[in-house]
Length: 184
Image (cartoon, rainbow, N blue to C red; front, top):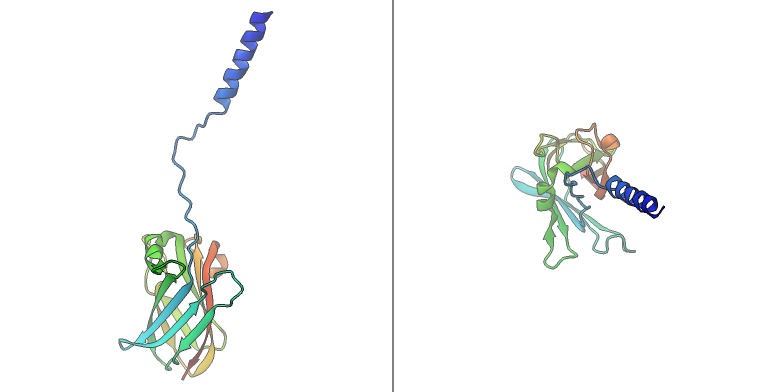
């Protein structure tokens, strides 16, 4: 009787050990965490000169203080602006340039631009990730007739690529800011 109990226990323990082993010997993909971005600066240049600077700065992150949003200058009508976006994490000292991290992790990021109904302008991507999908750190802003309205810049973390725009991109928002602009 003791031999039967011993053999039963041994068989049960062996089955338990082998049933818990992992058949997946592959290394799991690392999870890319969302970036800490406190400051987004957008530079719009025409004819090689920085004409308009858009900036949002939120040094306390999700804290009680609202972001400080600034717009320096107005846009000219019928003009193509080269746009570039710089991202900083100013919780570090010195500030960490997050633009470099976005470039390194280009497959896991994409900027989206949403032009409000009042602004007579449109945007177009001027850069791509390593698989040829839009990245959006560089873009073209084309203005048309005199008007006023808003433009929203949204950086998505781990969006679906390719996508048809922000509506089906999925992912999480790393930073988003809306700027009120005038075209003169």
